[in-house]
Structure formats: C-alpha cells, structure tokens
Length: 482
Ligand code: ADP
Ligand code: ZN
Ligand code: MG
Image (cartoon, rainbow, N blue to C red; front, side):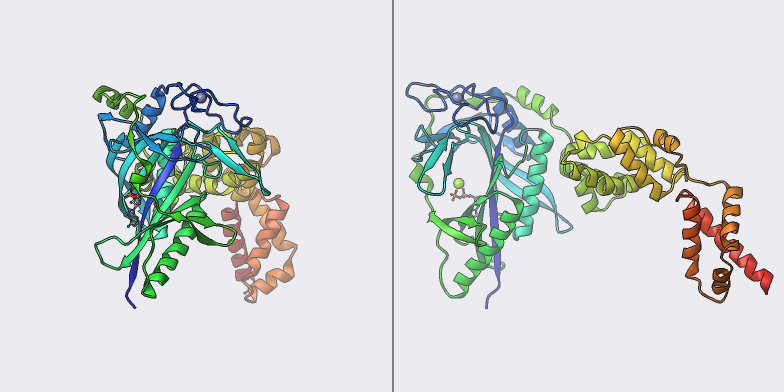
C-alpha cells in the first residue's frame, strides 16, 4: 500500500475586541438579551448605510503586522451573497480580492522543532447572527452578533499533522491575546476554526481534493476531527476511491465527521465590490504608529525566556501562554534571580490555587515580588521548603508578604547549630534500640531520626543541617562503642 501524507490548512475567525460593531454603533457585548444590540444597519433594514469602525481596522492591521504580512495600502470590501436566516441583509460584507493583509508567516514550536508556516491572508468582515435550534421544531434567531467585527486568518496548506495544526492554532491564539485584539474564547465562539484537509501520496507535490471541517469549537475537537478525517480519506483512497470535495461537520457525540453539504465554489457567492463603503486606504504613517503598539510577541518572548533563564522549550511555552502570566514571571525574576524555582512555584502551587478559585493571574492575591521574596527565603535557609507551602497558602489568603507571615506565626526555620545539636542528641538518646539497629546496618533509620527531629521542631528544623548532624552524631556513637 502506498504511504499517504495529510495536508492541512486552517481558516480562523477571530472576533475583535472593539466596543461597537464594525459598521454601526451597537454594542458587541456577549450575553445581552436576544436582539437587544441591534439597529437598522445591523438588521439590514432598507436604506441603512454602514460606517466603518476605525478601531476594527487598527486591530486588523496589527494582526497583519504581527503575522508578518504586507499591509494592502488600498483594500476594498466585497459583498458575499448567500441566503440564511441569521444573515438579514442577504449578504455578508467581507473582503475578497483585495484583503487588508497578505503573504505572512508565523514561527511555531511544534514537536521540539521550530517551523515556519505561511499565512495567506488576513481580512476584515462582519459576523453573522446566531440561529438557535431548540429540540422539537422551533428555531430562533439572535442578531446581537450580526455585525461584530471579525478577522479571518487563512493559512497556507502547510501543516502535515494534526499536531502541527494544533500548535499553529495555539500560537495564533496566543498572538491575538498578546495583541489584545481578541479574547480567544473558543467556547463562546470568539475564536473559531475551520480545518481543510486532504491526503496525498507521501512526497507528492500536487494537492489532493480537500474537505473542510466546521464546528470545531475547541482544540481537542480540532485534533480529533483532523485525525478522524485523515483516516477516513486514507481509507477512501486505499480502496481505490476518490475523495469528494465537501464541507463536513465534527459530530462530538459520535466522534466522527458528517457530511454537511457538497462544497460550494467562490463563484456561487457572486462576490462584488461593496458600493456603500469606500476603499480602505492605510497610510504608512498609521502603519508605523500601529507597529509601535505591538508588544513583544509570544514566540519571540518564549525564545528569549529559553535563552535568558535557561528554561526548556516547553517550560517557556507554559510561561508565555498569556502576556500577564509571562509579565508576572519576569517581575518575580527581577526581584529574586531564581527562574527555576519561580517557574516551579508558578506552575505548581500558584496555578493550583488560581484554578481552585477560577481566577487568572491578574487576580492573584500574591504579588510577584512577594513570591520572589519567598523563593529568596527558601534559598537562604530562612524557611524550609515544606513550611514554605504553608506560608504561601497564607500569603494567598491574606495578600501579605512572606516575612510578615513567618514572624507572626513563628515559622522561621531553625538553623541555630547549638539548638539543633541538642535536639538531635535528645532524639538519639531516647531511642537507644534504634541507634543500635542503625549501627547494625539498618541505615534506612536515618529517615526515622529525621522525622523525630522534625516532629520536635514542628517541621521547622533546617533539614540539611539536621541530616549532617544526625550522620555525624551516629558516626561518633558508633566510633565510641567500637
Ligand atoms: P476555497 O477556495 O475552498 O476557499 P482556498 O484555496 O481559499 O479554498 O483555501 C482555503 C483553505 O484551505 C486554506 O487554509 C488553504 O491553505 C487550505 N487548502 C487549500 N487547498 C487545500 C488542500 N488541497 N488540502 C488541504 N488544505 C487546503
Ligand atoms: Zn447595529
Ligand atoms: Mg477561499
């Protein structure tokens, strides 16, 4: 049997975080009562005219720049005509032959390898409304979403596995979050992804016939749908058949893709230039201004973290998921130069607490400087690692700094040599049989002695010191008896 390789390209729709819609002043707020955020423009009433939202253009240009695209100096809007109950005008205002941005690329870490994927285009368009089908026979239409600004980001067919597509989408999502132009919420539909898939003989340079899969509202669905579809197409070809060009749906309940319709062609939409809107002319000056507002992007920042803080690729990826999480890390490291410990605590205790309370890092009661100070105290032996968890817990509850809590609660680590020596002596004195057994070769008893010392000190003894003292004293007792 010939070996097949999958070819995948993604079309991603991202709702822009403008306060008002793209062609009218209605609010874009999610979750408002049905049809309350509407006006004659977004309801498509006769005679109503669209006015372009400048902020939406600014956000789309930023996305284009961040994705390494050429910004089209003069782009135009087009009408994409089709009939659907959630599209009151009977056409969607989109862009067609002159999109806002073209010819970009994105560097992505995938399977421990840095790969560059092509971006075909980024264009602006309006969202459609939402049809709600209640089980039974009724369907409802909510037009609050009609006219919410979207960018569509079309990739080249550059992915060769579902994992590559997944990693690309993740990095694209991070990029939009860093730019502050989309909230990236796939469940609420503010980030949506359609996947185009075909398979071909491995090594072939021509493209096979593709299917497009819709309804992928999570990363997991994307991956599962791609894997299912790659296998389905492989089987069709393996049996000597031909893949039909289709639009399919991911059916989560039955874990498969279903035929939705035979694929429409571009000419079915009767695209033509939108006569109610002027071309969008973007000056070099404005491009420069917008460039200046773009922060360090996630993949660049991830690579810098790897170099600057000696972290693994995957670790730096976890830290740079959101700009705020990465900011927190950098602030902590600038207070206490212990990136490894800070990484461990941020992804361990800190994340665990935030998850439990359903908070994000911006709502974290522990300030980055305070976490850093705690790391410093552990490092200098001011507190044991075990105690530190308890201290952190209180820091999280009260928002107070580590030092204040440690002195209030008397949790300082005991590192006083005389004090520890006498505790160790006491423990050994009161366990003569165990000391005997240790001498006879049961070295595992060291842990028992350690536990006794910790019990006496409520866990506050400096463990390195105690361990050394125990070994020292046991040795000398052995020596005496010989
Ligand atoms: P359509 O005309 O169906 O909209 P496009 O050429 O505009 O197709 O491409 C849409 C998306 O499908 C892009 O992301 C592109 O990379 C991807 N794509 C195009 N052809 C193929 C193919 N043969 N296999 C997989 N993906 C493809
Ligand atoms: Zn409106
Ligand atoms: Mg297309």
